[in-house]
Length: 105
Length: 313
Image (cartoon, rainbow over the protein chains, first blue to last red):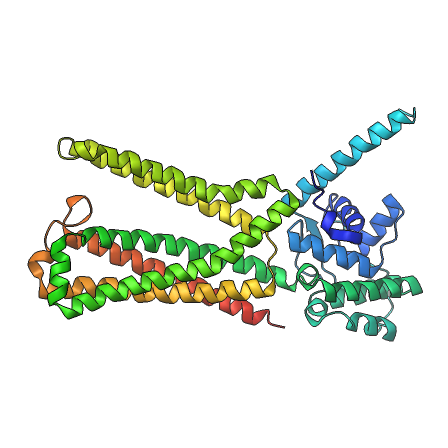
């Protein structure tokens, strides 16, 4: 099965992190950067963040909510949640196998 | 809603010059959609050397992949998907109306009358021409969309999209199989009129269900497919052409009946309508359906043109 994020190129991992962040609830750009830094230790630059956001929005996996001043919150859509679930299940399978082979699980 | 805000400055400083220059490197449509958000983010978090490099790469990417990275077009895409679906629905309704008129006027006597009544002949030929143009419009607009959808579904190996793609032809096949079964009942039409009419009604309902499923599949497919600006322009032009042709056909359908009524009243009041009903009934239904779908198609095309103008760079 082909990873739907494959054609995101270098934005695939940031896109996954953004979707994971939005799984908690709607957030705007700054909140996403902070959240991703907190839970993944990855500092997303503005260019990378919005490169990934725009691709996710174009696919309909996230959607923009009405702007609050200059900030526009985004939320995960139902199809985005499906994609994220599939991504995480795939990662979980890989992690489980790898940990077992390392004798850590 | 968790929307942690950036540290609030004491005043609202203008974005730094390097930040404005870097954001200015993005395409206009991208800046319109995201520029303020990005500058706000940079204002809150600051701009480092690596952050500047990241923005520079992002700007290059936005220029290289405008269809993927300029979501100012997202609203446009959603709008055009809706108008495409509305036009397709209108065209299918128009086909039903055209089929109704064709069935009602299929007897040789109508052709004979048309030879002696130029106005009747003109109305009929105008309706035929408009039908052909509307069909060409659907073909011109639909074929590139279908090919793009199929290509992308195959590239992504997206089974769901392929299933959606297969739905309309499958439904058409099912409907035609129903027609074939209906044709086999022809021998019992005279002996069992109630059964025959029931079978016809069942086939009609099958057609409605197949159409609804097909349209739903096309809608799903459009949402899965990323189209270029050129493909969108072609789709809008095709929608406009189709809507115009349907509107002309609706006028021709109405004109045909009015001319027939004034010049051949006995024929107009015959029982040549669908399933041997009075012709005025079938003609009235045809005109109502054709007018309704023409209005729907024209409104859809107008919305598509308006959306394109609003999102024009």
